[in-house]
Image (cartoon, rainbow, N blue to C red; front, side, top):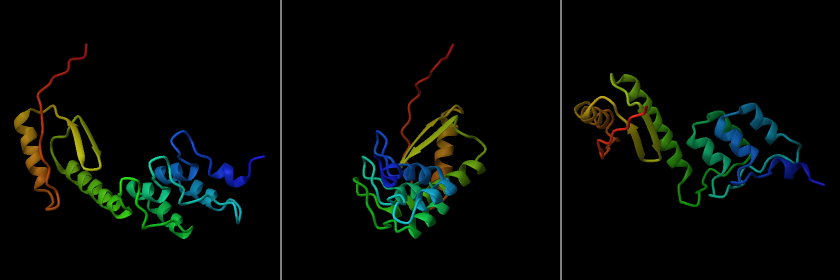
Length: 161
């Protein structure tokens, strides 16, 4: 027979638990239920996935403030480093970068067709010409003193019929 704790902390193929997914998605009510699932059967807030990532780490990276508060109250380790030696504080820096990006992008007259960032790499699809791309890059670097992006581009074109 499976215990309540085993059900609450059951991992998927990637080692992610229900607590991990609720932290990532910011589902406060679900997080509360997982953490309060019986006095001795609440979710393990420090359980790592296959890459060493915990619910607290992911909540910080995705800016889920309410879930962070709940995890801290439940005893989550805020000094934790994942397997790549990235600390919780680095995630909060990344969250700050996301806020800067959103402010810049919402204030700029031209937008990329696609804008993706993973940690410190940004991939965009730009459809406004090379001169406008260079201006976008210049404006982005001057938006905040902490931003210093390099521009690597090519002019490959795709046609969809």
